[in-house]
Image 1 (tube, rainbow, N blue to C red):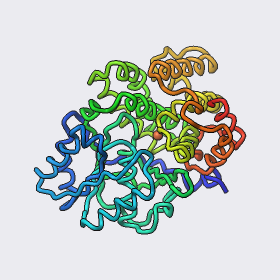
Image 2 (cartoon, rainbow, N blue to C red):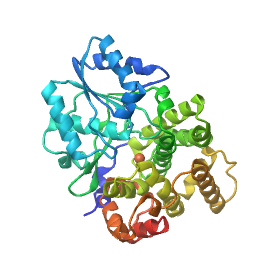
Image 3 (cartoon, rainbow, N blue to C red):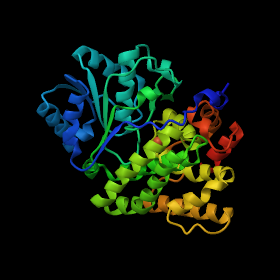
Amino acid sequence: MNARDNLSDSLPSCKFEVPEIIFGRGMLRQVGACACRMGGKKIMLVSDKGLFNAGWVDSVMSSLLEAGLEFAYFDGITTNPKDNEVIEGLREYIRLGCDVIVGLGGGSVMDAAKAIAILVSNGGKIQDFEGHGKIIRPLPPLVLCPTTCGTGSDISQFAIITDTERHCKITIMSRCVAPDISLTDPDTLSTLPDEYVCTTAIDALSHAIEAFFSIASTSLTDVHATRALHLLTTSLVPAVRERRPQDMQKLAQASLHAGMAFSNSLLGIVHALAHPIGGLYDANHGSINAILLPEVLRFDIPAVTEKLQELSCSMGHRADGGVNALGDQIQETLESMLEACGAPRSLRSIGVRRQDLPELARRALDDICIVTSPRVAAQEDLLGILQRAY
Ligand SMILES: [Fe+2]
């Protein structure tokens, strides 16, 4: 039985759930007060070396000290966070007697912070929680501070961890995984390396489009998905080219809206395929999405004709004409954005081997994101998408 066969008990209800949200320039200095409100005495701060060198870790440490809190620092996380790194973080949390986790970073850091929190209160190994609703006990308090333009992990009910034995990513979905507080300080984007501005914003673009087309989308999630699309369409290319603070702030806000949308409506084929590819090749998540998104959109469009007009409007078009014209407009805008950002355009260019495509298609059928694809995809359909994107 694959993930889509479990649809009936996997879909989220119409309840719309988001963490407490704090958003604005300079808000990083509120982290200490947030951790204090969560009842923390000793905080585990999870981050990475890049953010340490950029000075943002220091800012958070100062905020924790000002709030009278002790803290332990853990930075043993790499891109596509690994199960063994999560275990190392768990050991540190227990050894040092922490009681609240603060994650400062991109999706990798925040997903790892969530996974550490899962094991703190539930025990076992992270693979035990793969799929939907496997977490029994509530997590210790989590404050997540995103420092990229797109992950959405600071909002979402997902954590994605790489299983280093099976060389694949496991997707964990549970209401328990959403943090207590999502705190975005757009100033942190000022030190984000150029290539990550593009790839993380394209991740947010994928979140928004897939959330909008998801069969679990609602009028509430659509509001956030279309707002994210509008912000991304108007600010992604100028942000990548000029990095003006006002454009970067719009990307941070777009990420937040896209996160609120997809956390409640789930995703689709782009992410169902991106997870096995990321797990097998340790490749950049946003780059994979940039490559897959146009092909998946082409596949999805016949199943979402009634939503094309709204999507087209949110992307700034006049949205007149028939279904084919609307589909073409959307596709052209997407392609020109990807081109203008210099996003990678083929799976071959990021090191994917052609002989692995059938296995990647097979693994995508087991990913929970396939459940809400607007168009049912057989393994041959997924293989066709991968071949066209190759
Ligand atoms: Fe993503």
